[in-house]
Length: 372
Image (cartoon, rainbow, N blue to C red; front, side):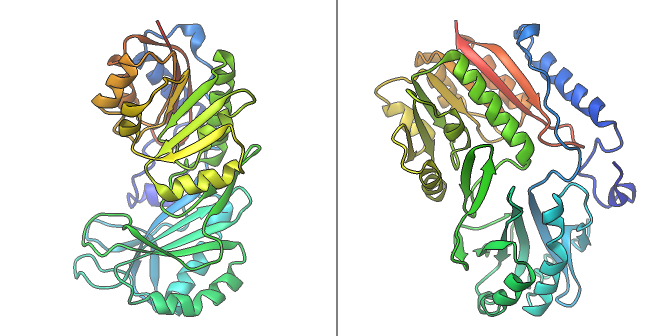
């Protein structure tokens, strides 16, 4: 795969582009093996590699340029807009929406935010595509000044982009490098995007996390479910459960699964996706606060923490609580290694590298640990 913007030095995100994909995957696998030397060689599953391009289900597009000629992409060193709508990493249905969205910026007179001048309204377009090729579009604005115009012209956008099912405005008034603010205004009857992964139909509302690569996310959930079936837990606690990806894939007859997430909208979406089944419950709570009050330790704990890792308090609880098995999914190998080093009585027994981010050195690593 080649990229015109990379060749020109305009965008440097894909630092491994130009290497054969198989070489990239092998290097990521080798790095994980070296970082986890205590894991037996036969405990490593073969790495999973999906598509090397056209895989990203979400676009975070900085809006630059002018109302008449907007750019959707990034800002250069001088804070000027650089158009990246031709990036080959986006899913085709996602990339096909960009021209229409740029036309909507002009139609609705959405002035791109000028960082040096601190004026303008539209900061970002955040666009997500589902496996059914449906779209969620979020307009990140500095204020509500343009809200009425977006509402006025939204019927045109929905006619021009029939796959659009969720549209919202996010307000981010601060002059800071923040992707989004705390207030979300949903403009459509649908307030969440359906993300079908295998037999599970997850619901993704605005401001909720979902893996950036749907194909690899499916492989990740399948592997987690297979390893959970091997250890056959009667009870599972999924911390950082988000919209319920791991929890709903690990659910099985005779197994009680509990998901915990600090985001109330994500929990509401997970409850909706669960469809009323009694063996899966979700709670809005801070993970650390919940485990401090837990009465019965589960057989299996699942964690998929932010890039920074679990933190010393949660690691300490895992070390001392007596849980027999841990499934740890990580997008940042150094924080994974640091956390596992602080839990020496949970031993890695199986692991897999999943190439969630082709063309970069990053990957997802899933590890199953058992108490010694």
